[in-house]
Length: 267
Image 1 (cartoon, rainbow, N blue to C red):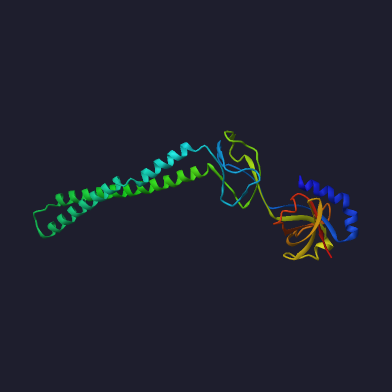
Image 2: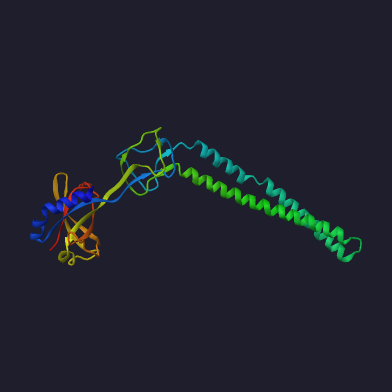
């Protein structure tokens, strides 16, 4: 939509702008803007913010119903904390090892212990050791399953991907959402970007990271700002013979509404 508006502006004013050789019209946008949704389907349980709220990265915006996931997390946690099987396996292994070592020493210095008796104790020790290794593996699996259940629960929450203002929420509490269905828009308008298209000759005069003057609309007034060149396209558009230039500028006072047009002022 913004690109279409921009092309119309360029076509309407191309002759006058090129004649002046110093004003190039573009469209402003927030430096960070996103339409976001959930990675899993579900029913919206709680919405923690309202449109217009400013949020920080990582803040919780809303959550889906999560009772089942919370139960699974608790079950996995209890299983992970349960050390009874492992403790029993450790005790059995240590006892079997102690018996085997004692009988082995006796076998070395006495003929009262047969090879069959020694092998029986060794077998008991090897079985106990295998049971201990299995218990250790089970405990590792319990930890992984607990971590997995926590990750699944985390998918029921929507977190702010960056600092910004909530622009719109198009779903209500108790409504269902599909996976990857975008229904929340967030934007950080404190820093904005102006994208314009310059002639090849003028673009060559501009360097990346260079400070440049901008003429911007906002509050029904035209304002002059200084921005920093963020990007200069290395290629020329075949249709217009213009190069894309992006300039970042400060808008911490909120006086520029992203979406309004503006001009890059070149020398």
